Image: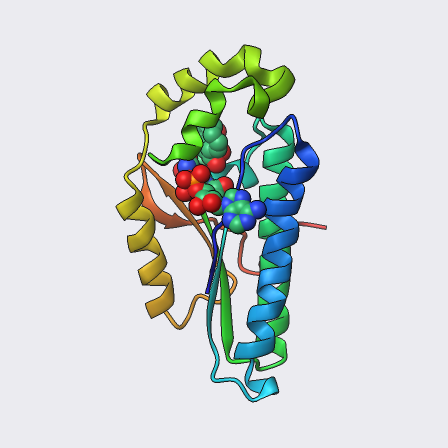
Length: 177
Ligand SMILES: NC(=O)C1=CN([C@@H]2O[C@H](COP(=O)(O)OP(=O)(O)OC[C@H]3O[C@@H](n4cnc5c(N)ncnc54)[C@H](O)[C@@H]3O)[C@@H](O)[C@H]2O)C=CC1
Ligand SMILES: CC/C=C\C[C@H](O)C(=O)/C=C/C=C/C=C\C=C\[C@@H](O)C/C=C\CCC(=O)O
């Protein structure tokens, strides 16, 4: 199961939270209800789509970034639970940088960018600097996650400079305290 739907809308930012985060949580719970071996399901893989903006600050997309940070926190947590509870379901996050899809056109619209519309050229400069990925590379990353039985909870990043790779949260998968 892939929870992929997403919007970039800083003007209607509640919608961004609803679509990008609330729906991912709801979708994951529905998926687990059907897939978890605890419920008589056959197991499987759930992939939740976040973004590189879920790992770094995004100055002109603060709520988009918050929603994507939320996806990572929720997914890593529920993946840990799935492992402890022997659900037989692996759950992962994928964080692409810019990808060549209609989503990128939203930066040209005041109705999406709201007060951050004035910074649209800065976002375009970022795209020029970091490049724009072909969607096929995201599909390739997802297939490799589905095939890799050892990576429950892992956060995959996909960038033009480093290709498909993983965020390193350290051996204990947590922060220093
Ligand atoms: N394009 C990019 O640069 C990047 C995109 N992403 C994420 O990838 C995912 C896919 O986005 P893209 O294909 O790039 O954008 P897109 O705009 O081409 O596709 C988004 C899809 O979400 C669906 N959607 C939006 N609101 C919905 C709703 N309320 N109910 C059901 N479906 C809804 C749309 O119908 C559309 O099919 C999103 O979660 C996005 O945040 C992550 C990183 C980079
Ligand atoms: C603008 C349209 C809406 C969303 C696009 C997408 O979801 C998004 O947020 C894309 C972000 C792309 C970021 C690209 C580069 C970012 C660079 C640095 O800030 C990241 C720094 C470190 C990552 C290093 C790595 O592990 O590769």
